[in-house]
Image (spheres, each protein chain N blue to C red):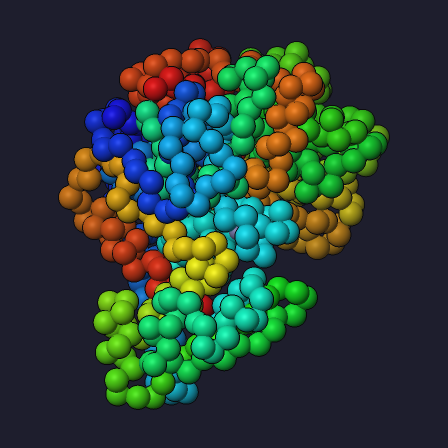
Length: 389
Length: 157
Ligand SMILES: NC(=O)c1ccc[n+]([C@@H]2O[C@H](COP(=O)([O-])OP(=O)(O)OC[C@H]3O[C@@H](n4cnc5c(N)ncnc54)[C@H](O)[C@@H]3O)[C@@H](O)[C@H]2O)c1
Ligand SMILES: [Zn+2]
Ligand SMILES: [Zn+2]
């Protein structure tokens, strides 16, 4: 079958690979209908997550049809249209019981790698490096999904493909940031990053009752989407100083909840950005935490900061003093899709949550290299390139 | 930095990571020799009967002759704490090696992790064979392959 593979730093292409087979009794096999690029892939492409192997099949956010189920699968049926959580979880361990699915004890066959990096191993993710389990991803005609009963969810008939697709990762991630960040009725929320993840975090905040939601980015077409499709306010950081602007817009308090949806490759005009770039390229720090720093500085006293953007290792010049003295709650997580997808699909069905606008570039899988180039450079107003295998 | 420079820097980081890992590993091994084989523990969300001495599931059952094994209830309804360490017995290390192909500490970690997974999720999760494209034979690729191969037995556990 055809699949999109990582072929080295900043090199992706389409190759002929073997079809996946069921390996465990709880596996299902899904024929992929739509599979999208995600900001997380850019970190893999750029070589910032150093356990990629040439030939690895990319992709973790997708929708498809169940074509085979293992003997241990009881809920999923052949022929169902399903959306699948990007993180793999067993549904039976203590973490899964707590709803913390991306922390599943049984989702990553390579636990020693992340345990060495972070002290504890976390769950596995499709198509996301050997540290995260070494699974083949969804940018292919077929993908094997372990724990199919737990991670794959049937899509109601009247939810269109291009809406359901984003329940797989972007919408679950954004919802998690708002939910676990503590957004509730009356909250004031600031979101860094107007990519799919940031937009979904902003929409979730509004649906959870936030009174004021501000999204920060510099790309005009994305900020326009936020106004038009999400219903939140925007702040262009290339034109305004974010910290004083946020103070002004929040009654002098600062946002109650700050959600960071930018990640380790944050951009910023100015000297500190050059400093971070150099340190990252020399591997003196692994990540550029520009937006997290700003979120910590912006949060109101006693407020919370939720890190949705992916970070891999160490950062420099982190304002820990602000976290401590302002009494902040700092939290982050990989997405707990299994916890949110059924609810998200209901909201999608009810029309409360729409995502079709995120799929700015839909193309055949064969054109994946062009799709990633557009997505990486944010060219032609690209928010997400979506592939049809 | 060009792509080649970056790849070299990456390989450097990976090697440094492996070196750190080796460092940690070496320290643990030293500690083991000083203090005898250390207890390693996993918490299994299962009822105590499922870890009764006469009913160990695989791979714990096969490894049991090489191990001293303890169980205790975990606090807060989190199941059972399953502890194991290698017996001070000349036959223990060879048995563990035969079962897992790994040195003792890695073997104990693997046996514990797999036993937990069998009890909680029904079977041990597999990932190979999996679809993949051309695997270039590069030094960096070899490092990643090696790291993955050893990953089940490594860590702090
Ligand atoms: N936690 C999870 O489980 C999870 C899941 C999916 C994605 N992610 C992460 O979320 C992040 C966003 O993903 P995406 O798909 O939306 O990516 P994206 O690349 O489309 O969007 C990132 C946005 O951040 C903006 N940005 C860059 N620097 C900024 C700054 N200093 N301040 C404000 N905005 C800035 C960019 O202009 C861009 O619009 C990535 O790091 C991705 O890895 C995490
Ligand atoms: Zn993603
Ligand atoms: Zn689990």
